[in-house]
Image (cartoon, rainbow, N blue to C red; front, top):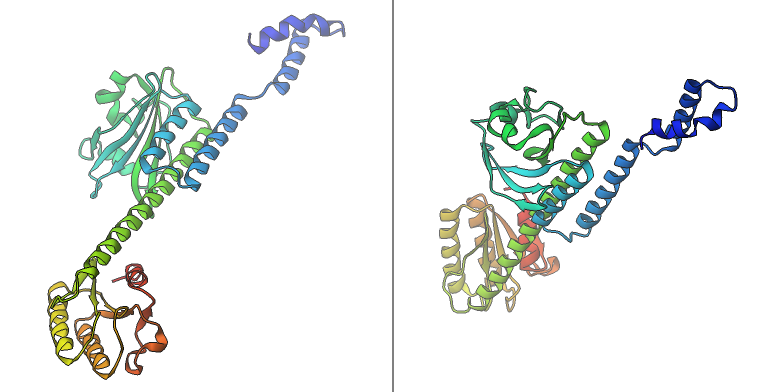
Amino acid sequence: MDLRERAARIVTIVRGEGRTREAATQAVLVELEAAEPREAELSWKRQLGALLELTRGQGLEQWSLEQTLRRVTELAVDTLGVARMSAWFFNADQSVLAAADVFEAATRLHSAGARLDRNDFPRYFALLSDARVLAVRDASHDPRSAEFAAIYFAQAGVSSTLDAPVRWQGVPTGVLCCEHAGPLRSWREDEVSFIASLADAVSLALEADHRRRTEQALAEKLALIEAQQAALHGLRSPVLELWDGVLALPLGGPLDASRGAALLASLTAALADRRPAFVLLDLSELERIDADTSAALAAMVRAAAEHHAQCVLAGVHGELVPAELRGLVTTSSLKTGLQHCIKRPR
């Protein structure tokens, strides 16, 4: 029963006040509309609840990127009442968009793998560089989306679209796409804001995913370092490449003039071959830092400088460093030394 029908049913109550039927109906309509929750308000509350749920999950870093995308597409379908929601990401040169997750309202199923080529949709790809949201009422005829009309919209029954580019570190990374089927739909301001917020949430998920991958790679490297260090005893040239642009030279055991010269030769060859930005001299296993050790370390520091690399002394406290080397960065362990190097630009 709509508002007018409800008003007509109670009009006899207010007609007793001397109003005409038309005036009475209008008066009741005003009252009912004031009491009836508006659809926009209800929609806003649904959107807020969806965003809060998504933020809680991301804030606790409970979800992987894949899980976040599945939840985002489901929330968009259920909150906006659209037929389909998808998340797409660019390849390295932004010539292709690949579907990371597509959620269908009718089947409640997820899929992925579809691809869009920039050469086939040049106008749409160009719009993603600057637009915040593309709210399109008539998807088949609006110039912003008409490239998809014949190849996709007609067969999929798509009438209106709502797309929000995803950016990470200021660069366009992908796009979220809502597809409405049925009569043409004019997107409300709250719906435009909602899809933009979902795009921001995906940006945060990308950042969290990048951080997790970096931490995992670092943990794997450190585990490899530990395994290699265990096998270093007796090796003649233990120069390790820990990270892109970072070499390490573990210096366990006695470091007399003969061994110092051999290690210097190995380091010099590695510097010339790999051209690193940093050299980590790991002193954590040194038995002592005597005159021979200091001389060997100083020679290694000079060799690194000649190849435009910065030396970092790892596994030693600053007060134990020989006076001639106290201008160098020191760290308490090889792990913290590597973290220092990774955070510095090359």
